[in-house]
Length: 257
Ligand code: CAA
Image: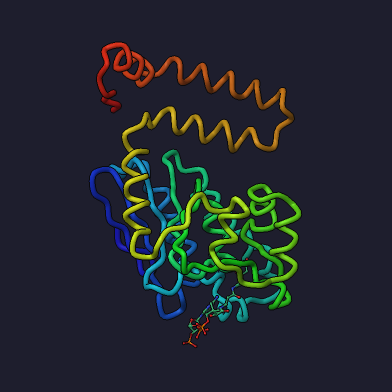
C-alpha cells in the first residue's frame, strides 16, 4: 500500500502506521484523512493482528488538523470538514483489531482526537497534549468534545478544552488518558511488546470485547448487559473458544487462527 502521508510496515502480525508529514508536524489535511480511511478499509485484507499508530519524526505525534488547510475552507464546508475527520477516526475506532496510540510528541487538537480513537494510549515522557482549538476560535471537530469526556470525565475534559493549554505527558497518566508514560527511546519497544501480547490473544474475542465496550458505553446498564449476552454467545460459538479452553485443559499455549 502506497500513501503520500502515511507509512505502513508490518512484521509478525504487528502493523505500525506512521503519520508522515514531519514538516507540518504530521498535521491532518483532507488527503491524510482520506488515506487513513482507505487504510482502515484495507486492514481486514492485511495480515495484521494488532496495529500501532504513531507520528514521524521526534517532535510530533500529530499537531492537529492542518490549520492552513482550514483557513482555505469556505464556511459552507465547515460541517463536511468535521465529518471528514470524524468518519476517518470512526473507521479507525471500529477496526476489528486492537489499536495502540504510541504518542511520541505533540498530540494537539485533531492529534489528540486521533489518539482517543485508538483503543488505548501509551505516551513518551516528552509528549505533550491538548485541545488548542479555543485559541483559534474553534472547537474540536474530530470527536474530541465527545471522546475526551468519555475517557477522562467531564470535569477534566472541560478543563483541557476550555483552557486550550498544552499539557505534559504526566497529566495524561494522572487523568487516566494514557495507560503508561515511558522514556522516548523505549516507546516503540514497549508498544511492540504489548502488541505481541495482543497478537497472541483470540482475535475474535478481542473484536467482540471491543464491540461490547464501545457499543455498550452509551447504553443504559441493562441494555449493555443484553448486548454483552449476545456477544458472549458469539464468542462461545467460536473456534477460538474451543481452542482456548482445550489449551487451558491440556496445559499448553493456545494456537488461535
Ligand atoms: N497545521 C498546519 N501546520 C502546522 C500545524 C498544524 N496544526 N502545526 C504545526 N504546523 C507547522 C508549522 O506551521 C510549521 O511550519 P513552517 O515551518 O512551514 O512554518 C511547522 O509545522 C513546525 O511548527 P512550529 O514552527 O510552530 O513548531 P514549534 O515547535 O514552534 O511549535 C507547536 C510546535 C506548539 C505544536 C505549534 O506548531 C502549534 O501550536 N501548532 C498548532 C497546534 C494546534 O493548534 N492544533 C489544533 C489544530 S485545529 C484542530 O485540530 C481542529 C479540529 O479538531 C478538527
